[in-house]
Image (cartoon, rainbow, N blue to C red):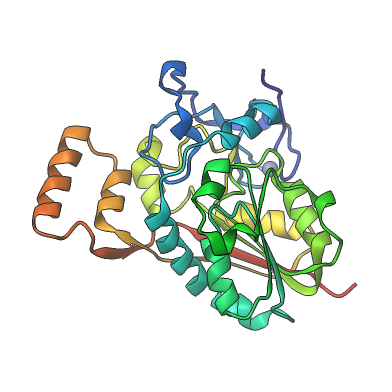
Length: 302
Ligand SMILES: [Zn+2]
């Protein structure tokens, strides 16, 4: 069952939006992996439209929230090395934010996976660490020392005390939530004054994503919206955050992972995989700007 929605950032009616990508869903190919992170791209998507006012690309007829929640709950999980690589890139990109927030005591991560980023934030001095993660597979894959930080389920503001965090991270997750404004507004309420809400989102306007078009891994059934630098800034502004910054950053992954994402025929992919493995190149880490963007906004003093 699907419900119709207008632009989830600015409310401009979806009837004013233009088609960005036509629906492409093959029910027979939907698997547990369709809702996993860092999977092989499937090039399936709901119909995506582009808001003429705030630049957001979004699904105007998303599946019901309960369907999404259960899809993520059962999503398989297979990406520990890539998750570690991603977290290293995030902590580097976040450095200016960590230096600017008022305190570094408590952090909430919305969509934490196995909590690998929380480990890195612990090393930066955070003592109260909480990750919310809907995938039970991700939580069971977490090492023992992180298990106590993780809460299984969909993020709900009511589960936390107002003004109780110095930092709230939502990385590669804003694309997946039903109501990105509600998530950001909740973050604003849960932050202490001087604290920061930080997101990592794909940028559909980045060079790589424009060049790949509908073969870009961001064109995906799990994405309920796609941001550009303009639209993520708009979201931060509308939620009352101050001192907003929006910057692309470099991701470093093994060559084998970049090849998995690349839009190539699977036969060619297999051949390249074997060739790079044979000469020991497949594990080489390569840094690329693929349009991932880190945005930060601060909760101003009331
Ligand atoms: Zn809009």
